Image (cartoon, rainbow, N blue to C red; front, side, top):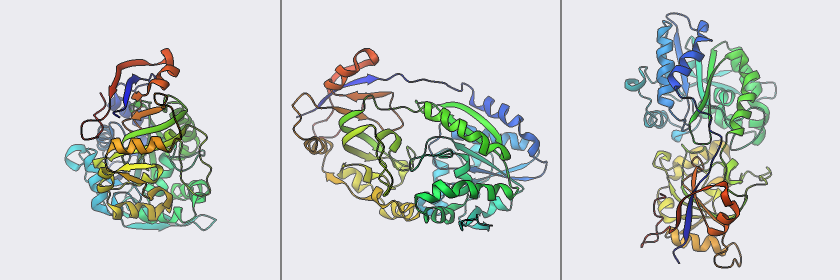
Length: 411
């Protein structure tokens, strides 16, 4: 049977930064006194798919040069990119961050220096080029993390510790298990702060439509005080699935630029970390994932959060790239291989069977492009009836598979 779904549009709160470059310039003006003429400034940039990151980085570079300093870019992405410098430089290039495009050289290396450890025995590392510079600027999105929750999750603090510390820091932090992220991030950040190298951070918060909501430059000694409030703003702006109870969630694509684990656990309600409680919502019986994004470069970490994947996705997996990532985090559940269906249509049929005896026409199915894009989604008739007038119907029910059993691009 060719399942038919309705295409709907959800409405989320949409705070938007209209002129991103102007916002960056305005914010940097408040911390510009930390930039000294003729100093070398390392600008740390991560691997997350931040909206307009190339414009943000280019504007920061321009402002650093305007102050008479000499900027360069360092990848601050832990073990991502296969845990090697060319892989991390390639991730930056895919995001539009090259010397030609942003006006500053890229110094990609996995070399680190070791700083004094924290009181509980956690070693602290820093990218060597950044450590040898006269000052460091962090640029990162602040948002709820995919592995844990606390006052500091995904943002400037964690980037300084894990991202800027390269593969060595990722391995060290994760060697403590989830306690590394919960208990050691802040003490390690204080060690980095004590080095005197951090100048300021440029924090980005996005809205539910993957657009820039606000940008704030924060002096290094104020990051610990300010980041929690920005995290709460990001949490309020997160998108969500249209309903709590779902039989099958169809995810068109997963990928590293979408979430650090391919699909955001905050959206799908699955964590898959041993010893950590699973989120209470949403309640999804089965998840089918169709494909892996090209910008994941074969790293399918997070596929273990799914119940069914397609042969197409499995064939795209670079197991070594994925295993480099998971050897750092040690969250092995997330790289386990789900059931492999030959086509999307076969995958949905199997996923529905795992839901028990659901009467035909009563299936609770939601289809999304990915966990970043939840404005326009597809739902079954049962769910549409439940949503009533709270959503806009973009298209009436349409078949979702072509003659080969592949998903038709969502309109």
